[in-house]
Image 1 (tube, rainbow, N blue to C red):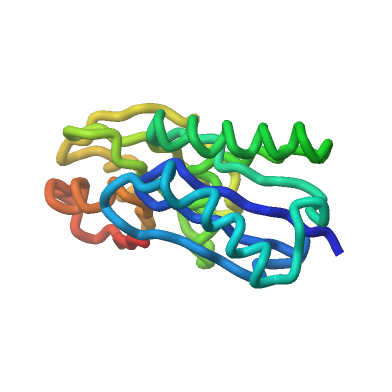
Image 2: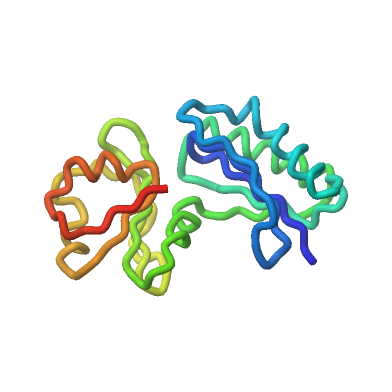
Length: 180
């Protein structure tokens, strides 16, 4: 089975997972509100490999969250992933951060992932009930009537680090908010 090391550093969360090609078999993560990527990423990689009796040479590929997100966090994660892939001569798989967030919602509903971009701005996109991206990734300044065109049509899930700021100003209360 494929052994894929998965790295996520687009937000304050620093995480490393190991996948066997069918699902995740191990995870190491830090949910701190402070950025800890430089201190924790390589330690997490070493620990997850050791705990699963693997060496770097056993990996078949590395997947990395490609953003949008924290410039510094992404730079740390991508640099580590590219260096490992180059030295191991294995593929690098870039995974869009917002698409990854949207896949956490298992219901067949419209999903709006949001990554906090400071002040009242978020990085966001819109995914339909079939998990197809229907509005391109963009930086958006949140307003009380943001996403009213979607909320008028039915239930919408909002997910990600930008949800809390939207919850505080959202005028349409029939929306379903979820945050992980």
